[in-house]
Length: 114
Length: 113
Image (cartoon, rainbow over all chains, first blue to last red; front, side, top):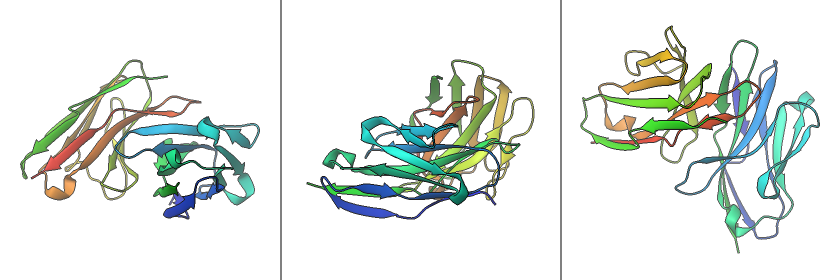
């Protein structure tokens, strides 16, 4: 069955540290890829998305992600995190080709300490 | 883009009762979905709401428990039937436009007592 895996469930970093959150999916067809962020008590917010073209995509708040098709991966990165990045991060994959549905990974809870 | 109006925004319900959640979109969309987000967890896809036909349910979700209507391309309802405390969750309506991202309603926070 199609699925999205996020390897890190909880990540704790100090401010200015670099961040990389892993995301892998299992689906051989065409995909659109997303990272969402959810701040405590708030709704989902789109960080970035990939549809086609340059596999390195830049999003809001200094985040970027790289799509590696051969690895079925779409890892999220930020070179220097801030305390305000404390939130939960969700990788999501839209499955095309007849499935036409958006599925989410389990999420990664990031805590950034000042 | 798409603006989604979802209501109610929250409700507290007695066990054994049912609640119907409405989702109204400001434009016609083909793909509409219902999700559940349990406390501290990710979004789980309940079903795809299909216009003019029965919804397509994901594994673990059944029509008797979560009946869905989709009378047209801008509106859908999700009913949570015969509720128990385990149904306490946030329920989200979402639409995906071709070649675009998903848009979400504000969610319905349901508490079953």
